[in-house]
Length: 271
Image (cartoon, rainbow, N blue to C red; front, top):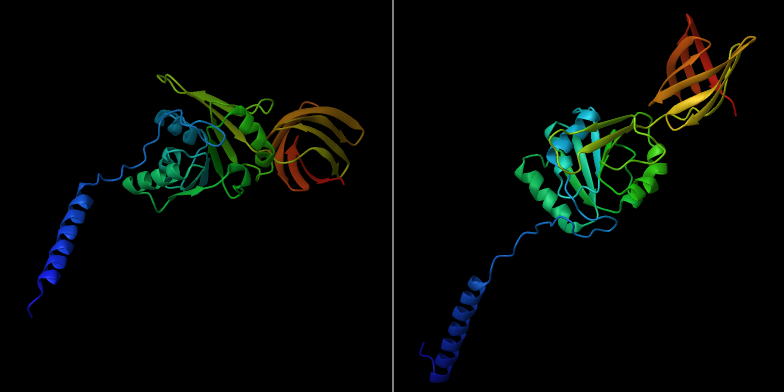
């Protein structure tokens, strides 16, 4: 079919635009992947990466195993979550910055652990991390304190590890430093204690406990004898001395089974 001169001109013009637009598209630079900068602003803190040596130390202190579910609060570029996943653990990073979340996902994919390392964009104070056996964090002391009540309500025995910053009067169960490290070289470990504060009824007496985080004091009344106690909680495990006898046992909700001095005692918490 023969085209008219006008149709031919229109066709030529259309083809010219196609060529020009194609060249323009090819000339556009590829979109750069997001790269974080040390000190960049976040919701509550600025981003500073944890040295890999300290990441390893924190997970060692928490005795992370493949049976553990690890949650990193403020997961940044994902290195702690990825390291836990390489140890065989299921791990979740909670991060407010969506660009950091996507970067973490790419990093996990590069390391081949996307099946175990997951990341979510969320606010720490609105997130549920009650299923974790281990929680890691690198947050400011003020944020640690704000999270502390929620942490203390976690299941007894949950391990909490912090890069550098503590929780004021809740003293760590363990503190370690990484040798040869220049900045951010200290890790603190807490083990969430059971709730043992109060009066406990014994078959022939009463155990009164005053609890300050993992440390305990009080009195043990057994028959006609009354002795001050001093001891500690390690998760749901309790140990204390009273009247020259060392006692040890387990707290399970409103019951406690302890043994010492050749005796086994079952205690029930008073209401």
